[in-house]
Image 1 (cartoon, one colour):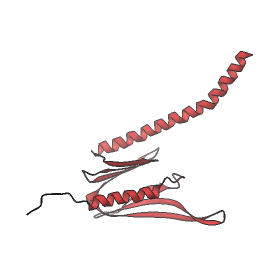
Image 2 (cartoon, rainbow, N blue to C red):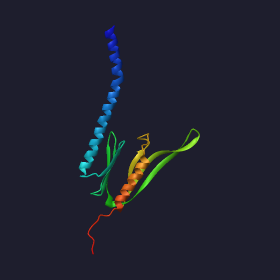
Image 3 (cartoon, helix red, strand yellow):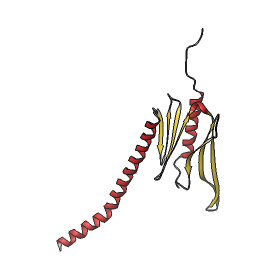
Image 4 (cartoon, rainbow, N blue to C red):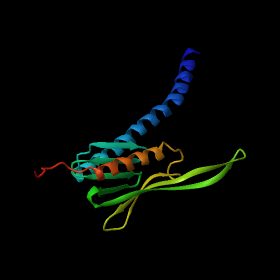
Length: 167
């Protein structure tokens, strides 16, 4: 009787805690994979990132010495990498796509997509996706984040290096 009770208890414990540990280990593996891709992209481009942010499946980093910023969108199948030289920039524009929905008798605007359009001097603009409802259902302060990075990058454009002044 005691042995069968112990066996049943062990089976119940394993069935409850095993999925928990499997989810934790899979999350750690995914974080390591994303971190390795970020380090690889930084190394391949010989960057010295001074300011960076990593959220969800997106990474943005700024190298103030080389005047470049790196934007990565990491998915299970691919890693979209965009490296932009700040000297080639003409400006930025935030593009929001919203859809009106009715919820509990009230009309609300649902954010569907949020992009930072990078306007370049001599070529086509680059679109950097910060949020897409098809990829990620939950918003994570993306609007504040895109405004913050736009301000940081505009600050880098307006910053002029100090040099020798003629008397």
